[in-house]
Length: 373
Image 1 (cartoon, rainbow, N blue to C red):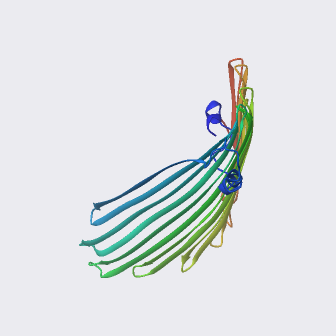
Image 2 (tube, rainbow, N blue to C red):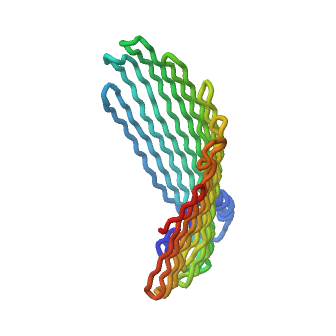
Image 3 (tube, helix red, strand yellow):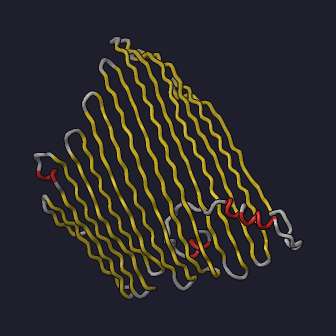
């Protein structure tokens, strides 16, 4: 949020910043500029470019294992600008790519274990963001931007060993993969310096898949995974030093499964959301979440609802408080306490003309409990 967030407490979440595709600025306006015949408008656009390239590799030894670690990071930034009288158009484009690798190889020779190990972990990330700004002196500006990110992770492990004392061989094979993508937008309209309307949004999705196999006289296999998606947004109105008001919201959901061969299978789903509304006089937040799981033939569940606020008018009065409700349970069960449990708590702090007061409580059901806090 730039200078805005440094001038007063921020009321918008840090979601992706950037906006409208660069083609809208350079293909449209730049094509129009190319057609200009006015010699007072020189061409081409001003262009500044900067970038970095970092890389490294290292070897180490951890016991009987050799470790190789390496990384590569590349960044690039291009800034295109053009002065059109009292107006200035700026396009800021940023890109980055990074990769990290770690491998482990070893041979173990001990009285209780003889074996070989090979493992590797990788992580890759790519980002592209751009922001276009139109400034009109001595008035304000219009800013639009977007940012896209893609992250992938991977890990594998293979180990074969033998216990010389018993002659029992062991074989372990593990593999996991993960993928996450996100995209965000940013828009701001400031008709005057320090005054404006700001909007931010972000959407993300991702998933992971894990597999494991173990043989050590018996057999165990595990297959698990999860899919997750979410969104967040923020909206604010800033009127300089007089007042500011904003609202944020976020929602996310996840589905997961896990199977342990030869018998156990489990799955579950979860959902959560958060909202905030605030400004110069304070902030109010709410949050709700629910989680349901099915480990084997049973069913577990939990959920909560939270509300909190912090409001104040200078040194005259301030109010801070919150309430929380949570419930959890297991079905089927012969224990009534595990079948359902409800907890309610709350606090209230009031300060009036420098005189504070506090009230708090915690209540539980099955069995019922009441405690002062």
